[in-house]
Length: 477
Image (tube, rainbow, N blue to C red; front, side, top):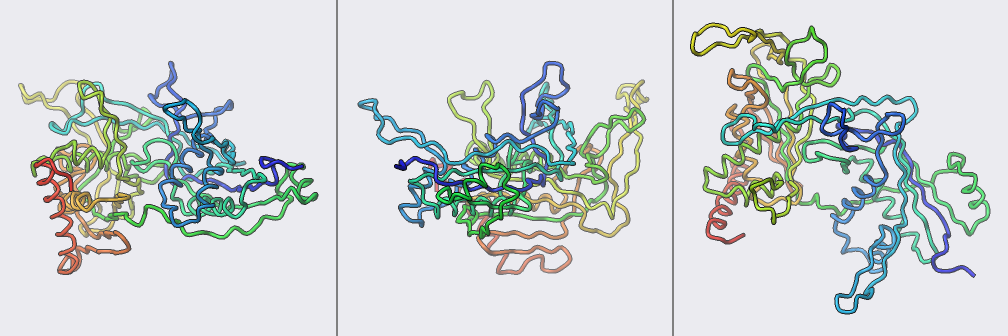
């Protein structure tokens, strides 16, 4: 006699999980290490992605989507698929509802055969928003796995007698869809562009243990001998219906440097951060700059940092802040992008430090840097900045539009050595997308934007002003 919990089949999804942006999954800190955050590595010293990290991200992403349109039976099997904890009765201490073990098992993703992962050391610093300089004792560094490396992915789903195959197959198809579309991010600093990955060459296998040859095939433990089953992509009823994004392209007015320190002694003291021969625009640097400018804009409009900056960019309480308030996860995602080097050159600039009292050069104050310089006089698309807010509020879009204006006009600089003119940009083109609509700004055309689209953008700015006014009166729109 077969019980309700008897295993009656398996579903398996395999493929290559390819990193699109750097990945940080910390394995703690090492006492003798050089980094504050050390990438998780296996016994051979190679980075890997633990199944626990993937399972948590997949589940979180799934439940952010709206599944209310699905049948009641599907709603129940969601809990069977992902698993639930029992709910205790407050009065009697007994279980009001049973817990269910998750039907899925995700293996640790190790490097694919022939792959060599590069682990880089990056550094960051916290900038005081009022003074614009680094805060004392707030410098940190961290390891990250550089992109364009693949890991072996395997996810297994157990089918039991009470399971509805169609519901499980649909969820597996949804997972395949969002993974192949690169919609899921893993690890830390996802809001700064890290952790985006994509599933390539996905294969889906299904076994029905009511059929003897399926049982034998499964017991051989080699699914490569089994024929994969077609698993159609499904529409993702996700939160992206209310997504606001800005994809903007800029020219560098003069020069740009986001510092990275070379390992060779003969190298300049500071060089622009790169991956191989590709110069980067890190999401960490862009996010920090636009957060500082957004805070400045909000305060100028008499808004509160707590009401407007913390919900959008995130916040972690530090003494002497209120310890009773929980940390807030930011909503905005800033992508890391590659800078177009076709219109740039790298040239060393040597500098000295001047003694302000004597007016002479300070001893030991000679240093040099290797920034990116604009070649030629024509403005070309060199730098791409992409910002995204999911489940956005109109006032949040209005705030980002004001930040975009400052970037566009060169009023907001990115990176280091801003005091000598580095990091200022000139807007070339921007695509503003929200709720299935696009508004394009083009510096090479006049007017910059049509009157109809300008009215829509002005309305977003008005939402920001109205929200600030309401919050100042103790009311939330």
